[in-house]
Length: 375
Ligand SMILES: Nc1nc2c(ncn2[C@@H]2O[C@H](COP(=O)(O)OP(=O)(O)OP(=O)(O)O)[C@@H](O)[C@H]2O)c(=O)[nH]1
Ligand SMILES: [Mg+2]
Image 1: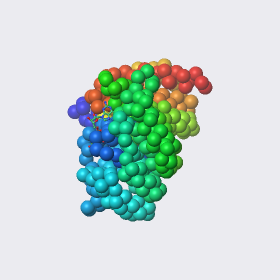
Image 2: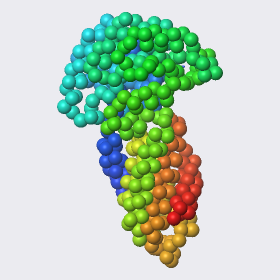
Image 3: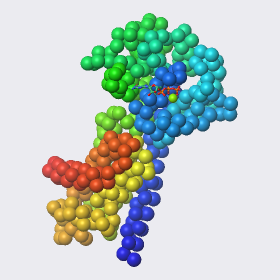
Image 4: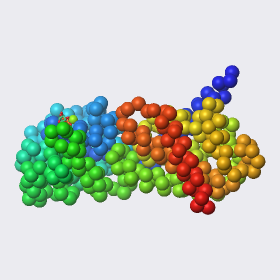
């Protein structure tokens, strides 16, 4: 009996959260990247490093059309096009023909169906960039795909990149290929012998420079290495929600029996989750652990958090001003952004619910105090 309202709230939350998340995710769209290079150069390792494990590990991809040698793997805000069982050089004609067809067909489709950029990967220590590879890059570029050349597995020590890799980069530059910027030298995953990870941010920045404005938000959500970009975008959403909440004002506390979340705050955490590119399952699960969302068990925590909020009368059933509503909303948004960053840092490790909600609490209080002091 006693648990019924809790379940009702949880179900309400789950449904509402997913709807809102989807709404925001649809607005962000999808960033589609084509990744080429000879087998074993480190394409999957690179995709893992920049976008997380989901795509490359499973390696699930569907042929784009029947008989096509192009495969599309997609999850969330990212689509990866690659080839299977065909070799650049021997099969260049086949790959280019498939790509050409795909690009032509997709031209009529929305932006999130198009291919936005290509990475052509070469293993630096092979010290070889073959004429057939140069030819492939030219053919790619002729399809009006912005191409970035990536030298993979570049050893480095004390920030100094291996001379062989720089020499290969110079050789490639001397070919005057129609590529975007200079070849990017990187190491996607650290190795005890050949050195630390480097160059990923440079590749990401170069990619941001060539993709259309309309997919920058999707790329921001899809990538996992540049949290500052996500934070900037999330902050804009939070600031807007603060203004909206301030305008509403006069909100009764608690906003509903067991929740401190009105639709506005719910929309905000869904939006921030999408901006950070947190999968909806993970985000919804984590959100139910937060004290502002948790039902019965967490109710005391909510009242505890708010005990110092100036309200007319008792907290429960009280009315708060627009300023306070704005501060609560902002504190929820920023605290939730901190949780999203922690989830990204955790990678594939299981989430520690207690640690996440402790983080949320601490951030909520700090941000709330800061926002109230501003007024
Ligand atoms: N330490 C380290 N190992 C790497 C790196 N890149 C590739 N490797 C290793 O090189 C091997 C091949 O890498 P993959 O990422 O599978 O290469 P791929 O280009 O996806 O290969 P195919 O899917 O066969 O075309 C694996 O054993 C990787 O662990 C890197 O940046 N650092
Ligand atoms: Mg691979």
